[in-house]
Length: 92
Image (cartoon, rainbow, N blue to C red):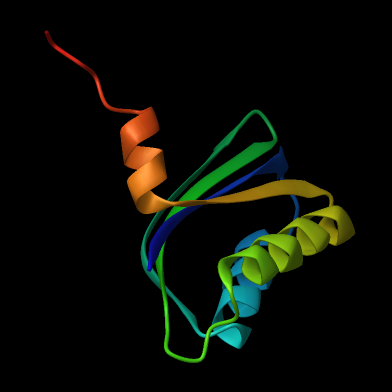
């Protein structure tokens, strides 16, 4: 399953390492990522795909939320199809 992970919070050392490490531990592959820092505010969006040995989506979501609480950032994950539907522009 493909999903989108977003990370927001005050910039600090190790955010990318901690988030990507947690995903790795859950057999979730990072396919693409974009990150930036705006006046000490860290933002990152990752396109990811779960693997054969990945936990269920709700477990991944809970683990990322707990990691975010631990390191002081907000981490969200959405299934890519839902993310795409929410951000589609209807031109009719």
